[in-house]
Every structure is written in structure tokens, then in C-alpha cells.
Length: 172
Figure 1: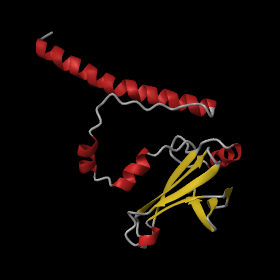
Figure 2: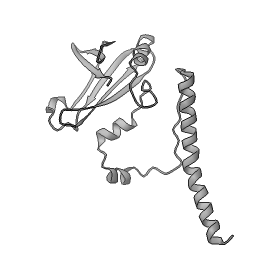
Figure 3: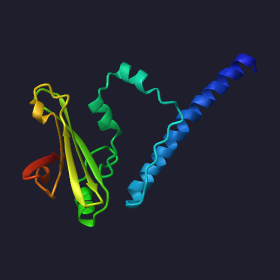
Figure 4: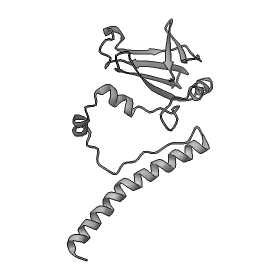
């Protein structure tokens, strides 16, 4: 085998290992945690490829809201990213950490990001809406973050009662 072919073969094997091993770890831990459904189960996401961060963001044109949504953990979303309301409400009753997120589109087609999590220090849910990308939202409704008193299941989602107002976390 020629030296050139050996170098190409080594490069291909290296690339396959850098991509294949983290993907295998991610898939096996996700499927194991979904099968066990334990509160203590942790899904590992590993990448051996360097994080090019800003260079890729400039190419992909993601803004701060989209990056925040993509990197926020959601322990009560299923493996395809759909929010699981029962998981969140059970965690609230048991006073254990849980988080949930969802994205909806405004009438104009702009994304609006919804987040909720349970703070185990005081067992109260936190709810936030990030509508910075909604071009027609009022300035006072671009970002909302509140501490809530209660959360209950509604036919359209989870209804949060926060500081005398009601907020709906859409599930669809």
C-alpha cells in the first residue's frame, strides 16, 4: 500500500472515530434512560470535534434566542423534543428538579420560546417567555420571567399562576 493511501486511510478512520464514538455514546445513554425512566439517569452528549462556536454561528445565522433554546436542558421533554407535561407536574409535586421547553410560532411566523423549570430550593416553578424574535410583539412582552405559585394541567398545556397572572405553556 502506498504512503498516500495509508495517510488517506488513517484520516478516514480518525474522522470516523471522532464522529462515531460520541454518536454511539449519545444513542446508547438516551435509549437506556428512556427504557429505565429513572430520575437519576443522565444522558451524556459528547463531542470529540472542536467547538467552532462563533464561526459556525455566523454561517448558520442563529441569534441569541435560538442558541439559548438549543442549549437549554429539558429533562421533561421526550427523546424527539416534545414536552411531557405529566413528568413536569409529577416533579413539581415531589419537589425535584425538572425543566421543560417548547417553541411556538407567532401569526407572522416568528419563533417564540417557552421555558419552565422547578427550583428545588423553594419548590416553586419558574416560567419564562422569550419573544425577542417576534417582530410585532410589544417591547414590554419581549422577555418575561416570573416565579410562579402553582402549575396545573390545562387542555392546551400547563397553566402557570404567577404573580397574580396566568400564563399558558403550550404543549403542541
